[in-house]
Length: 371
Image 1 (cartoon, rainbow, N blue to C red):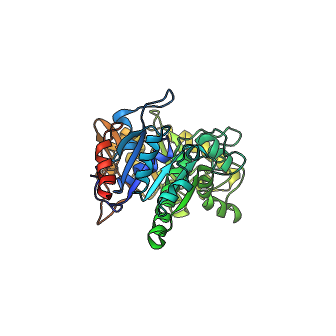
Image 2 (image 1 turned 90 degrees about the vertical axis):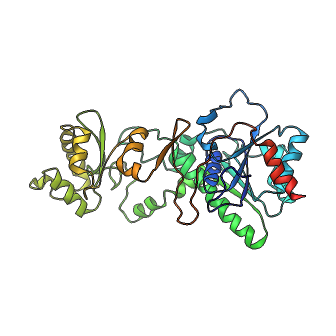
Image 3 (image 1 turned 120 degrees about the horizontal axis):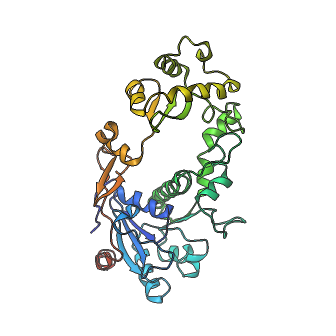
């Protein structure tokens, strides 16, 4: 049986072909929400594969079988499972699944209702579709990296949240679920082409609207969300960091009052972009006079739009995060709880499987029960 039964996606059967990055993260999300996600692991690990064991949080809640898809027997078994699946997700380079005889055409011929989810960086088509790349390259080309830095400096390399996870895994999940709704209504399966360049560009649409309205600039440090002194992070006396995000004037007034600057004409308003660098220096000097905890005591919980910069272990223990049980430890591994939350069908995080652990169970559940 599904090792993570329950949740809003209970009853869905998802095949996930072994891969790295966004496709496995999508599989974890679907498993958290109750889908029976079967990870088709490799029969043997290759030299570039990473076996994280119990630390592979992105495999939690899944069941694992091991197949050699380069053999006729492995392909035959997988195609039998395809016949019993609602969806398949894979993150291979374009053409790899076709060369294995497991491309969309073959799988949809076996199961016309199948949703075939494909996850790549560049997309299934286009001049770069066959070129190697990683998260940083994709968000660089899509424009999403542009604002990740200060004027005159190279953009910072962010964690793979904007690209692989946000622009990739989440868009694959939305696409698969949308296609599943269509398949249930019409009996027609289809291919979902999710690409990090597409998704990370789509995430830019709020900024594109602001840019078109003249409220956002192509010049870094000159826009509301990347330049003002009142929307920045600052180093504190003890080496910790805090953030202020007093975007609206009413919140800016609270921040200035709390900082004791309400009678300073230089801070009477949020100022024009030309004044921001000088005000940033003043804020930096001020925030360096107290520790992070001291600033938390003054500003946290107020309308100043404030938060400390926490590492994940600190975040897990913060009173707000702890009250919502945002993080938890399983087998000694810190991990975030499922999101979002459901009032009637709560999501649950299952355990991390060992490679091939559920071979017999899956074949019994999916194949023998279909006869």
